[in-house]
Amino acid sequence: MNNNIKNNQTDDENEIKKFSEMASEWWNPKGKFAPLHHFNPVRLEYFVNQIKKHFSIAPDKQFPFKNLSILDVGCGGGLISEPMARLGGKVTGIDASLNNINVAKFHAKEMNLEINYLDVTPEKMTKSYDVILCLEIIEHVADVDFFIKSCEKLLKKNGIIIFSTLNRTIKSFLLAIIGAEYILNWLPKGTHSYDKFLKPEEIITNAIKYNLSLNETMGFVYNIIFNEWRKSKDISVNYALSFTKN
Amino acid sequence: MNNSQRIAIIGNGLTGSATACFLAKLGFKIDLLDVSHAKSQKPVMQLSLSDNSIKHLEKFGIKNIKNKSYKIKDIFLYDSFNKIDFKSDLIFSKKNKNNLAYIVSSNLLYKEIYKLIKQNKNIFITKKRLNSISENNSNVKIIYEDKTYQNYSLAILTLKNSIKFTKKEISPLLVRNYKEISNTFIINHKKINNNTARQFFLKDGPLAFLPLSKKKTFVIWSIKNDSKWSKNIKNKKVVENFLNLKFSKIFGKISLNTAIKQFDLNFYLNVTKKLNRTILLGDALNQFHPIAGQGWNMTLRNILSLFFVIKRQQNIGLEIGGESFIKEYQKEIKSKNFIFSILIDGIRKSFDINNERYAQLRKISVNILNKNLMIKQHLIDIADKGLSF
Image (cartoon, rainbow over all chains, first blue to last red; front, side):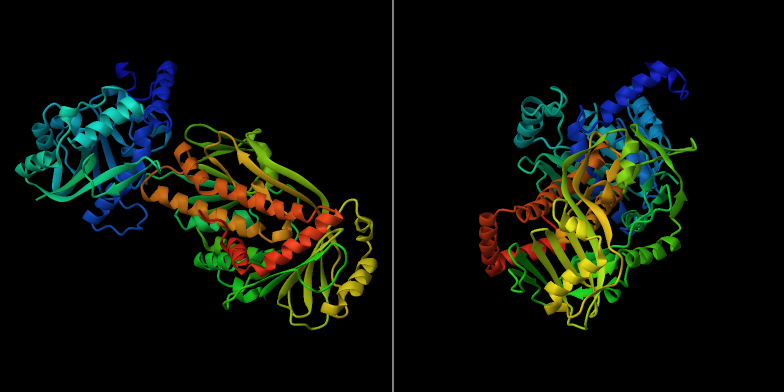
C-alpha cells in the first residue's frame, strides 16, 4: 500500500490498477457503498441549501461556493468533497485511512477536480475553514468531546459546521443495525456499534461548550415502499445538526 | 474554475439545436457537432406542436412560434374504409380558447432556435466527421475522422446514423416497418375556414390534411406498398383528379402546389446498453408513424426531462453523466417513452387491418368513443402534455 501515490501519480501501473478498482468500489452506485449513494442526493441537497442560506448565497448562482473554504472530515472516497468542489468550493478532504485518501485522490484526478486530500485527523490541523462537514463520522470517533473541540478550532468565526449521524434510539437500533446490517445487507455487519450512536443533545451540549450555537436540527427518513430518502422532522434515526461559531 | 463538465451534441438539426439552446441555460460549455456528410438537408416538414410544447419553447426564449404558426381548433377523424364521406367518426376539439395544435414549418422553428444559438457564447458549432464514440469511467471520448479527439462528460446523439459510432451498444427495443411510403405535398384550394385537421383512414393508407392557411393545406398520405396507389401517387395529375373528385366538398377546386415528396415509414425505439454517458434524443431515439402528429412534441418533452434532471444534479454538485445520473434520467423518461410508442403504434395497427368485419366493428367502437367526452379529454391531455405518472 502506502506511500507510492502520496508523492503523487507515480507511473506504477499496478498501483494505478489497484486504486482504480478501489475507486470503482467506492463510486459504484450498486456496489458496497450503495446505501450511501442512495442517501447522498437528499443529504447533499440539504447541506448545500444550509450553506447557501448561511452565507446568503443566491439559490441559482452558478458556482455558489466559489469563495468558500470547505473541510470534509472523514471524506472517505470523496462522495461529498467532489460535489462541493463542483459547486466552486475550495475543498480539503481528510480521512484517517490512507487507503481512502488515495482512492479519493485517484477519483478526483479522473474527474478533473482540484481537491486537497490529506491523510490526517482534525486535531493535527491548523488552517481554518468557512465550512466544516462531519458526516457519518462522529459515531466512529474515540472521544466525541475532543473531536468536536478539534473541529471547532478549525472553524472560522461566523463559519458553519454540520454534523450528521445516527440517533441512539430503539428505532435506530432496529433500522440501522438489525435492518441495514442483518436483514437488508446494506452494510457490512459490525459497521456500527449501537452504544457509539449519539443523541442530538449529547452533541449539542458539547458544541455549546466550545462556543458553537445551534442553527437547525433535521432528520432524514427512509421510505421502504417508495425506496427513497426524505427530509423529515423525525430525528429518531438519521439526523443532522448545523452550528455557527460565535 | 473547478468545472470541466462539457457536453457534446451530435447533430445540429432541430433536435440538436434545441437541446443545445436549453442546456446552455445551465451554464455548460456545449459543442454542437455538425456531422452531416453531404449537403443533404432534411426536407422541410410541417410540425404539429401542442399548446404545452409552445409554452415550453416560450419559456426558453423561443417566442415567435405562436404568432407565426397556423392554429388548429379541431381534429376530425374519418373511418373511410368502405367509402369516403364527410360524417366524421371521431372529433377532438378543445373546450377553452386554447388551440389543439399549432402547425409550423420545421424550418421556421429551426431559424428561431438558431438565432439564440448564435448569440450564446457557451455553444460552439463545429463541423467535423465522426470516427468513434467510446466511454470510460469518467468521460465519453469522441474521436473524429482526422484522428483528433475530445473528452466530454456527456454525449447526446440526435441523428439516427450517429448510433453506429458507439460500436453496437445501442439496440432497438421495438422495430416495425410499416410497409408504406409517406407522401407529402401542399395543395391550393378556395378560401375556406381552415381550422380543422382531418385524417381519413382509407384502405390504401391514412390520408391527413393539415391546414397551413385559409387557402393552403399540407397533405400527408401514407400509402401501403401493395396498394394500387403506390404507383399512381407518382403521377401528379392523377392525384389531383382524385382529390378533386373526393374532397372538393371541403376544399373546392384543388391544385397541387408542390412536387410530391416521398419517404419511408419506419417505427423504432432504441435503447442504450451499459452506456452511462451517452443519451439518445430525436431520430437517434425513435421514430413514430406521423399518424398522431406526436413526433416532435415527444422529443421536446424528452429534452425538457433531460434539462430538469441535469439541473437537479448540478444544483447539488453531482456529476453530469455517470451511472447515478443515467439512472435518474432513465427513471424520468424510459417507461413513458415505451408506453407512448406502443400507444401510437397501436393506433396505427388498429387501422391497418383490412378485414370487413373488423372494419365494421372498428367503426362502431370509434363512434362510441366519440361520445365519451371523458376519455376524449384524456386523449387530448396525453397529446398535449405526454404521459405523466
